[in-house]
Every structure is written in C-alpha cells, then in structure tokens.
Amino acid sequence: MSEDDTTALEQDVLEAEAAEREAFEARLPPRDFLGVAKALNIRDPAIFARLVRSLRDDFYEFHWNCRGKRPSRAAEMQRLRELRDAANLLASGDLGLPLDLLDEEEQFVATAKRLATLWDGELRELEVGPSAAGRPSHDAFRELIICLIRTYQRVAERPAKRPSSRRNKTGYFGDFYQFAIASWHCLRERLPETRNLIPASEGALGEALRDHWPKKNTTGYKLILYLPK
Image 1 (cartoon, rainbow, N blue to C red):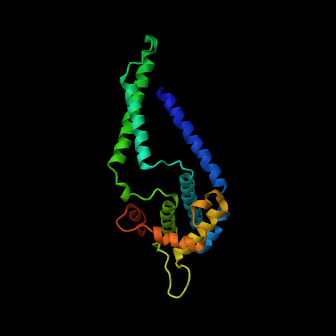
Image 2 (image 1 turned 60 degrees about the horizontal axis):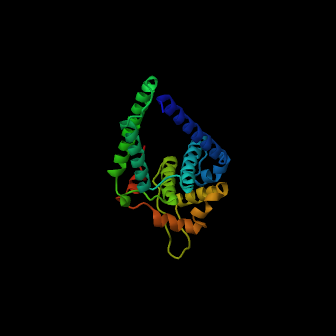
Image 3 (image 1 turned 120 degrees about the horizontal axis):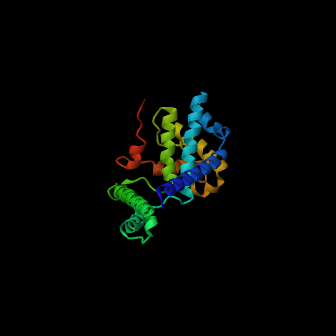
C-alpha cells in the first residue's frame, strides 16, 4: 500500500465518520434541548448554542459506547499488538516484486515501518497507563455521568453537586440533578434505542448518580474538577 493509498483510506474513514455524526445530529435539533435550557435558566442564545454542542457531544459518545464500538483496554492492546507485529513482518520481509516495482516495494516497506512504530507507541501508552482500577469505568452510563457533570460545569459555570436527599422527604434534590433529569428525558425521547442502558425513572436516575458519582483520588474525579474561569 503506497502512501497515497494510505492517505486515501484515512480520508474515506474521516468522511464516513463525518457523515455518521451529521446523521446523528439531525436526530437532535436544537429545540429538543429547550427543556434542559429551562432547567438551567438559560436565555442567552450563545450559551444555549454551547449547551446544544456539549450535550450533542455527550450523547454521541454515549451512543457510540452503547453500540459496542469501543473495545476494552485488553482487547485494544491485543489489537495493537497484532497490527504492530503484522506491520513489522511486512517491513522486514522480501516481497519478491519484479525489478520495475522495487520503488513501490520501498514505499510499501517504509509505510509498514511507520505504521509499526505508530502502533507500538500506542501500545506502550496503554501498557504504562493507569491500571483498570484507576481508569473511568467503561460502562456507558458511568461515562455519561462524567460527561454530564463536565457539561453542566462548563455551561452553568459552577461546580456540580451530587444529588442530595432530605430527611422525611422522598426523592432527590439539587440543581445538577434537575439538569440531569432534563437531559435524561431528552435522551429517552430522541434516542429510544439507549433506554435499556439508562435508569428507568427519575428516582432511579438519582440513585444511579449518587452511586456512581466519581470518588476522590480516581481518574473520573480528576476529570470533573471544577476550575473557575
């Protein structure tokens, strides 16, 4: 495969991803986020546009995870090993091409070497990265919780707080909880295929948020640290 072929393949992948993203966003027009904006008391069009962009990103990530496209850490490491080893094998062997194709062979070998180096670097990053216990959960909904916390903090410009309960009163309370409820309704209505992976009621949502709120000294907690502008 020549460098031009590799570039063309990468371009095809990027175009396919862009088309998929465009189709996904068409399912989530801005008006579908009005309920979330109301929960945050947003009236500024610029802030509303920021909210729409952020929640679309969050929902797309969740949608991607729910479809099982993202492999586990172990599976990804195995995939990178196989790709690296295959590229090294191609780069080190004699392809036996005719003399008039030697230039193409050199280009092929050079491309294989670059890919082997690339995949070896990605593998090393995974190997020396934090252990599974220190990584955010690969569970789609737990990752969505982290995304929603970060979006809330960026848009509301204040720290998100874990839903609270009150003595002698049922249910949960808090500004972030109201934002999460509105986002949950939007997700259920516009992406019904994900309903089996999110809590079935507002109360269950509150319990899930409390149970899976990122704990201190974890990667998830570091991701939601609020930094005022």
